[in-house]
Image 1: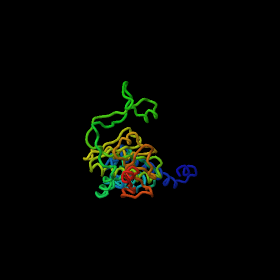
Image 2 (image 1 turned 90 degrees about the vertical axis):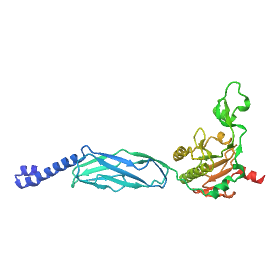
Image 3 (image 1 turned 30 degrees about the vertical axis):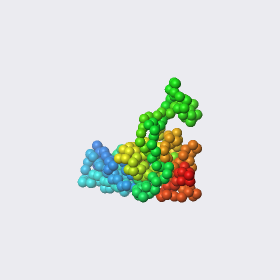
Image 4 (image 1 turned 120 degrees about the horizontal axis):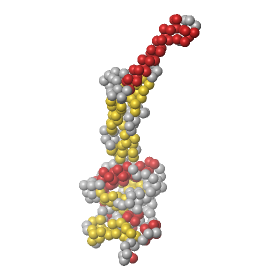
Amino acid sequence: MCLLAGAFAVPALYVPGVTMVLVAFASTVAVALAARGARVDLEASVERIEEGEELTVRADVVGGARGCRGSLAVLSEGLPAPLGWRARSAEVRVRPLSRGRLSVGPAIARWADPFQICVREVASERRDLLVLPRVHAVPAHNLTRLLALPDLQPTHTDGIEFDGVRPQRPGAPASRIHWLTVARTGSPMERRFCEGTGPRALTLALDTRGAAGAEALEKAVRATASLCAALARAGGCSVLLPGRPRAETLGPGLEGWPRLHELLALVEGDEAPRWELAREAGGLVLIQARVPEAPPGVSVSCSVSPLPDQRTGVLFSVAGCSVQPGRRTRAVRAA
């Protein structure tokens, strides 16, 4: 308008032209001052949370000019809260519904003039949280039915216990060679034993191979967490997880439970536990995300799956999975 006013000698156009230039300049300066030196801090009420529980995510604007028009969005999919002279923070409640790592944020503070001529945004860093699988309560009478299975009764060792495998030492007897490991790796390996007395704890094994779907896998992981917590309170157990080199141990006082809960939250893929460790268990509870099927050479005392075997009765259900006696237990009952 200023150019037109000068080109065609129309002084009246100078007034709106200069006004618009001043408005644009004032908007740019005001928004730039509002965002200058500002930062956004994002905080979560907890670092670890179970599926379905609620946590609070809070964002705070630090620095910058107060009293300027703006908005603060804690989550990208949430509604922004207004920023003003006193309003410098906002919070939202989040309820994660799936386990695993959860990335929250970034929170974004946005300043703009009423005409949207100038816009400035400041983003926070993301926060990583760990969502743990939900633990379902196992009633005492169901746990009693499980532990009453003949093949899950505690067995006592004769002074030594199997403690994994190790490279074969010169002069070691051939009876100690672990032929399955030798066949798989090609390296001479032998069984390692340690002194042990007392009852041998039963073992739970989670097999994620051939899962019938994502929901079936989630149910199997929740059932594993629920049974582990219940059996630990009942005296302890050992747990074999996919891809882990050795068993995780849970004590009667839930010793080792936080670590195991975190490992269950990160279970992925199509892997099996180390079956050579399962073969040494006194009683094995096998959890699968498909129709129950015992691996070759492994004796299963009890099967847990979201897809039960229709030929076998169901003891009870936990986390959407059916608990059924395995072939080994049925053979003991028949005998």
